[in-house]
Image (cartoon, rainbow, N blue to C red; front, side):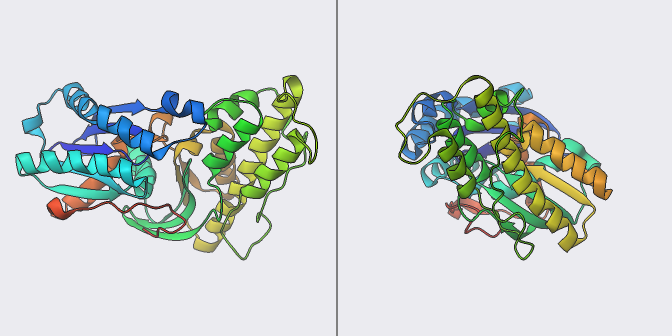
Amino acid sequence: MPLLAIETTCDETAAAVIDRSRTVLSSVVASQEAIHARWRGVVPEVASRAHVERIIPVIEEAIRRSGLEIRAIEAVAVAVTPGLVGSLLVGLSAAKAIAAARSIPIVGYDHIAAHLYACRVAHRDRMRYPCVGLVASGGHTSLFHVRGPIDLVRLGGTIDDAAGEAFDKASSLLGLGYPGGPAIERAAIGGDPRAFRLPRPLSADTDTLDMSFSGLKTALRYLVRPPHAAEGPPPSGQRLADLAASFEQAAVDTILAKVRLAVERTGCDLIAIGGGVAANARLRAAVEALGAELGLEVLVPPLSLCTDNAAMGAIAWERLERGEDDGLSLDVRAGTDRKQRP
């Protein structure tokens, strides 16, 4: 029973075909990075228009690569929350059209929960529950007590910028490209992460599992261009590498402090991480080192499953196997994880 999963929560148009064993038969992602680079961030209206142009070719390509035909698809899954409402509606409309035309079940899934389910897709039987889940991306930075594949209790998260958003803004301050995460990671090569003293907001506060990145971003801004100073060229050479490495380390330390606290509070022996920022090598290494220190298992998806994709829509099998079907009344629920509690 192959499932067609569709993902259009933000600026990637993606589709995947996944069988009941959670084996990904195909996965296609059309990125909009080049489109949004001129604005150094995602423009919602532009993103939704790009989805309209790409959704049908992406679905057709996913089915073609799977070696199947559309009539072999037995169910449709689509990410319905959280995300940009215009983008979400494009994916939902395509999913409903296929479900209606073929009279097959349609189920919606939570994009955040799916990022953590990518660990199940990648690591099969190693994923177990309960565990501590960290989702860090351009729009979301949250910690969860994951009691089951679709049973998440939010422990805390960012109270301002998401980690990926902070990387994007920091990259702009440093005169680097978009998206900011990869740009800063490249610039930090050869840099000294201790060269500049940058804050780790809320890291020492053991009363909360919330995080903050706004102050870190502001501190970097004042290093690059002090108050009342005339605007000059962006940093370069070793200074640029040191600034990038120092910012990257501060962001990782901020996240790691809360992951450690979440493990202490829940008593879980496994940490699962997902989201675009989970592709950052410094963060991956830091979480794995924390796991080794505490004697915990750490699961991280491969890079292709960290950034937005539809393969993580395999989470829909958890509902389909219960016989659930949302039907054509299914709707989207926009927003961010700051308000969302899966």
